[in-house]
Amino acid sequence: GRRVSAPPMVSTADGHFTAVRALAAALGCLAAVLHGVFSVVPLPVQYNQLACVWLGLSLAAAAALARAPSGAPRAAYLAFAAGATLLMGILYAVDGNAPLTVWCFVHAALASAMAWLGRRAHAFPRAPAAEASEDGVPAKIEAPPVPHRRCAVCCLRTSLVLHVLLLLLLLLGASVAFAAAVGFPPRGPLTRVTLPGGEALRLHYRCVDGAEGVPSRSPTLWITSSPGHGVADLSGLQESLAGRGFRACAYDPPGFGWSDRDRGSGLDQADVAAALLAEVQGPDPLAFVAWGGGASTAVRLANRLGAGAVRAVVLITAFPEGIEFDEAQRAQGLTEAERRALEVAAYRSRAGLAQGILAVLLPWGLAPAVFPPGPPPPGFRPQSRFPDARAQLWKGKFWAQQYWGIRRQAALAAAGGATDPDLTAPVPVGHLLCKPTGDGPCQRPDGSIVPPDECAQRKDRAAYLYQRQVAFTRALDAKAVFEEDTDPACNLGLPVDMPVVAARGVARLLTRVG
Image (cartoon, rainbow, N blue to C red; front, side, top):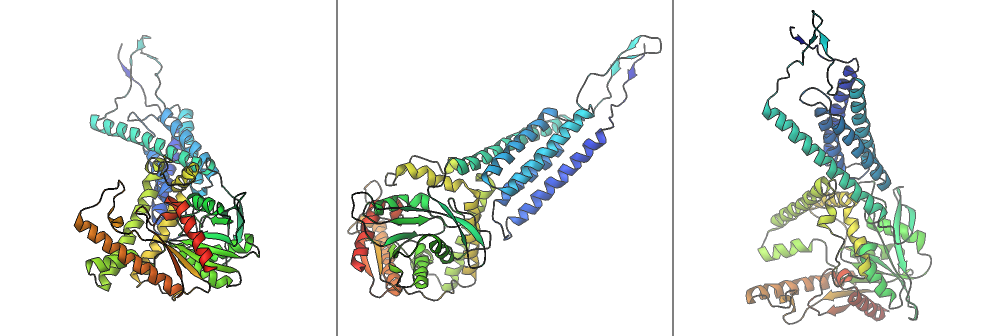
């Protein structure tokens, strides 16, 4: 009999399927564009906007790839996309990331709707029923020819594989965020504080009492540092100070560790610390132990609280702001304009690095590979806490906080630098410094000595940095006292890399300043 061509298989639900595809594509593109813009615009909420960009692109890709080259929807692919993003949403909900949670659930809902409507429309590949010819003999059915090109089919299949791979990476990123939130619980209490501007947030802090069998010593010590450090990496210094009879406390600044993220365009760290002390310190006398960038915070706090409440400020390897650029200006003979350009370029480069981490490392779950939880460095104490410190680098809130902080530094540098008045301390100041003697500055980690020319440069640099540290400290307190560590291994990371040595120096300085 003659051949009869099968009519095109069109379902009444196919229009709904097409409409949902269009909606998914539009929402995906909108999410990618909006969150891409948000990633470079300060917002009252800081989180990883670039992870939302990936979810938007994934949703648009799911809409584009929902149909196979034959025109039939891809059932298994859509079901996988829906299941993967649903699981991501649950993981991000536990992490407390509301924007990512919402977009994951939107992605899952639209992928599920496309899969369901495709099934309802019977649009998936199926065998057509046989039809009879005019003489009653079953006719051989021929499906309408579907033109395709091998190159186009290959590109579509490659795109499908790449999108599945992207979904797996995004799922890994959500799993890492979940692990960082659940697998590393806080080491101390969380207390709610209200800042001068009215913003309320929870701050995590931890206090360690003096060790048993060791005479108790006063005052209580509060450790301050830059916004990129907190309880996780200062535990060794806390416990070493407690071993000498002090009650030692440290806290996580906003955006770091277990504290809430900064929901504004930047907080004054002295305001944050003052609000925390008002809640938890009580009337007992205290002293500040300030590491690195925490020096300014400690001195401003001492001025606010007064000499009646604060006994002393002890610095550990603290430098004036912008010392690295001062050193470059001295070494390279730069003008003030060239120094400022160097500073702005350096901050922009660091902001780009933070943005890259937010864009790829965190959404794809690669942070544990770059910041592994072990093994800890030999000097880190206690070594069991090293994974806690590393897990903080897996959190989007930390890198978002760093990114906007660096952006503010770059803007300040472009405007001519800091405008704060020079600080002076109302209480005695001590400073623990690194001052390797002899060929100490020339010694490599393995104990060998660098060539003579490089050795001379290192000695000159060490002498310059030491002089700047002394001048910085004298500006805070003309009668400041110093402790010097001559170990060649002494470095800017002294409280983390050598906490026992740092605690010994702090105890000596507190004895000397009274």
